[in-house]
Length: 84
Image (tube, rainbow, N blue to C red):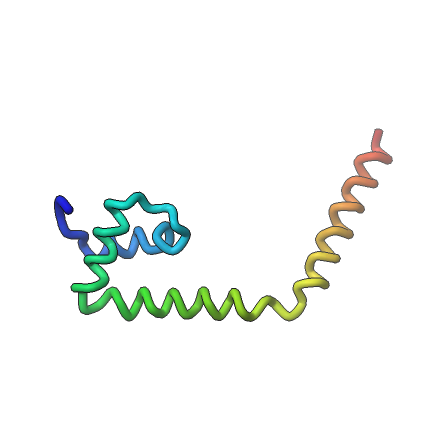
């Protein structure tokens, strides 16, 4: 590890870290920062909990939303076909 991350640098990497998009060096740098920083771990944990909650609780009207979007797409396609 060449250098330590600042809090701002660490926070900028969190999303990529959670998505598995960081290279090994940056993973180690971020994990080291999270182990030794006093302010970033609670923020990181909050993000993890929010993401976990969102994954477990899909929107209540998910099916209706998909259906409305599909209706709009179909209407747009029909309009385009009628314009030809």
